[in-house]
Image 1 (tube, rainbow, N blue to C red):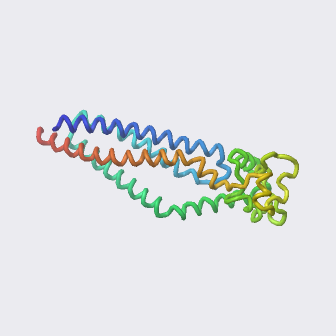
Image 2 (image 1 turned 90 degrees about the horizontal axis):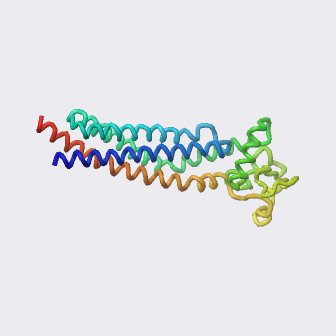
Length: 239
């Protein structure tokens, strides 16, 4: 039984190590997106992926040390390991619940931050204006929820103008007064989808992969705790 627990714990922690690597990669992809359309988002929006990256590194190290603990069969080390994994698992469950409960609030915070950024378009910050144009061109989007948003922003308020980056073909005055047009007319000239939905769609595959990775990690952690406790009990028995 002791050999089985030792082998199982080693394999499980090797899987944890792999999950840690996957988490680091996925978080890095998230962060790299900041270079593509970070100008659309308020400062601090990418704090969560950075936290996920740090967590991934911790998981990676935990898996490595778990493998070492399994090989040495030290009861104190194994109990400490099991306690750390249990605390990490509880934290993951609490975080998952908070994300589920406060999804609407989080979306509202992001969209309000985006509205603030878009409202600065065409003002004194030329670099921001160019970045927003580039991001909207890349994502084929216009405004936060849609092209009509530009009626509420400083640049389009009273004129119906949208950003130059909204134009499918960037010709002279392609953006002028388009926010007043109905969808059927506007979509002939500009992108009408909102950038918030475009960002969500662009990140969807990464989010799903991260969710599956987290689920696998949770199941492996529970098995690791069981094996570590069993191996620690056997180690004390032989001591």
